[in-house]
Amino acid sequence: MERRGPDSDGETLTGFAEYVGQHSKTREDIKTWFDAIELDDYVSFGGKA
Image 1: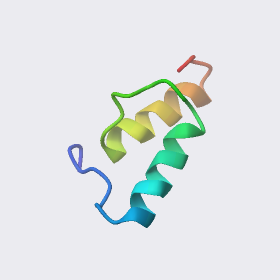
Image 2 (image 1 turned 135 degrees about the horizontal axis):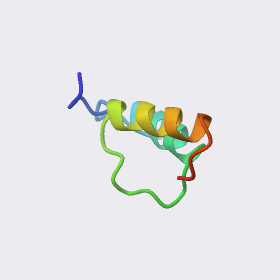
Image 3 (image 1 turned 45 degrees about the horizontal axis):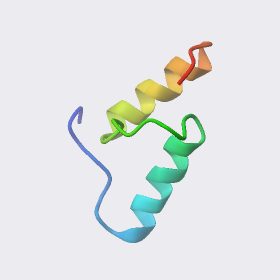
Image 4 (image 1 turned 180 degrees about the vertical axis):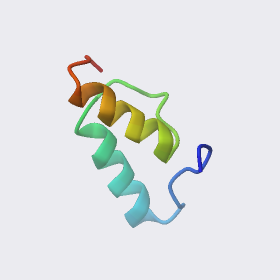
């Protein structure tokens, strides 16, 4: 699960991009769901993305 990225269909990729975009507009290193959830946790607890 740690290495699983979003499926390649357009709807899923768009959803993934929107989810990551809620927390950061500049991070290009977020490639997997694990990375996205870690970013969410980091920002939720006061970190700056």
